[in-house]
Amino acid sequence: MAEKSHGTPAKGTGAHTEADGGHGGGFPPFESSTFASQLVSLVIAFVALYVIVSRFALPRVEGVIDARQNAIEGDLAAAQKFKDESDAALKAYETELATARSRAQAIGSETREKLNAAAEAERKTLEDQLTAKLAAAEKQIAATREAAMSNVRGIAGDAAGAIVQRLTGVLPDKKTVSKAVDASLKG
Amino acid sequence: MKIDPIHQFNIEPLFTIGHIGNQTIAFTNSSLYMFLSVAVISLLMIGGMAGRQLVPGRLQSIAEISYEFVASTIRSTAGAEGMKFFPLIFSLFMFICISNLIGIIPYTFTVSSHIIVTAALAFLVFFTVLIYGLYKNGFKFFKIFVPSGVPIYILPLVMFIEILSFFLRPVSHSVRLFANMLAGHIALKVFAGFVAMLGVSLGALGWVGGVLPLALTVALTALELLVAFLQAYVFAILTCIYLNDAIHPGH
Image (cartoon, rainbow over all chains, first blue to last red; front, side, top):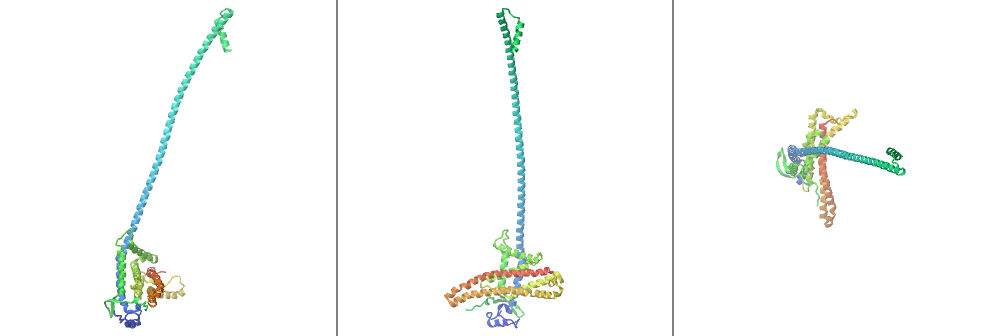
């Protein structure tokens, strides 16, 4: 385009550029002879851009962003699910632990009671045996003493009879002697 | 040596496509960069998403971030209904942003440094708003010119201002982008030109002195990177705000 501005002959800038071939004189942005070319190019370029952008570029970006959003939401949901699961597992573990602990306590106390009862019973039988033995021993002692005592009486009566005979030369009546011994034993 | 900061905006015809009336329609350097921008955007948005990975790589991250960025801009300014215009706003934002970023590379051409391009985009938005607003709301659309709660005696004045501002929208919308890109690139060229000019005219001393404008050029390039993105964002967010008028005409 040889800078010919037939369309707008009134413009001064157009005339300038014609004179010095394109630069120096005129101010390029105001050279109306170039307007048509620029407009045509702009229309073609911008329409092409608009079609590319609206048909291909933006749907593609939107798809990717949506896919990412979905992926993030899905991952978050999965994470929440896992967290819930682990919470439930923890709860189950805790209840299990509590029941196990209470059971262990029950078993412990039961065993202790059983052992205590057994020990108590053993002690009782032992005590009973000892008491019986003690009673028997006491009885034996009493019998022995009784026997000893009656022996003592007999001996004392004989001795008293003998003494009276020696002193008086008369054998005393057995009944009277035993009466006297009894009296002195009591006295 | 002469600094020629305007030369970078020249439209150079590469080959002729055809004629409309007696206008020659040529494939120019501007056309080349327009199509380059479209190609880069397509590569980013389609090539970058080719993997469709759950955990995005770098390119996919850029594609997704630009998607989310534009989507959240629309949602916050025009509401969920504004998402109807998502492809349009996304195309506008990406086209302006990518062509501006490409324009910062030395020896390239900045598409949006031409008023005709920005005006065409601004009018595209303007007519989209006008046609969609009338189609969706009928005559209720004109409520945007009648703010509620204004006393009746100053209503005509307010209406006049509202109507004027509505019809001046494409002008401010386009000139803002055009002027920013134009001024930024001229400033860059001037400061970069100083480096060479000092060196050529003053010799060794000049090359040493040239460090200062060189540092400024580097700083300006960083600023231009910001402006390139920011202007695309401003264009997109204004589009959203204008579209919001069409969707919800009641103030």
